[in-house]
Image 1 (tube, rainbow, N blue to C red):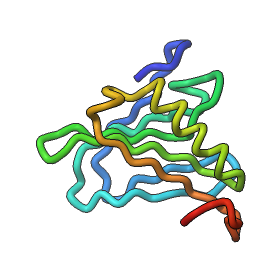
Image 2 (tube, rainbow, N blue to C red):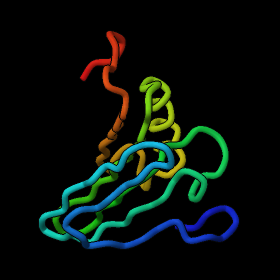
Image 3 (tube, helix red, strand yellow):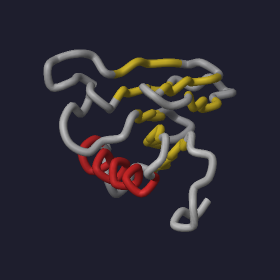
Image 4 (cartoon, one colour):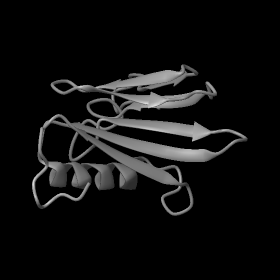
Length: 118
């Protein structure tokens, strides 16, 4: 996947641990014990450079399964993270209705508060 200005935003990996790092936040590791080939897409300021967007998209598309995993790394403001995930799905999903999706929000904030269900 390319950015609007032509930069490459995708990397194809088959690592056991896939690191997704935020600019000011922590790192989230996705475990890939079978070392399946996945497409890791940098969404924020690469695949999408304007508007609401999440940080990462990881796509699996092989004989085992098809799935999109959207990831937002947040310090806080979890409700805004949900908006970012929804906006990214609308713009980047291969098939918005029939391609299975998972969304992850990793918060570095200690407590989430009563408005967030864990």
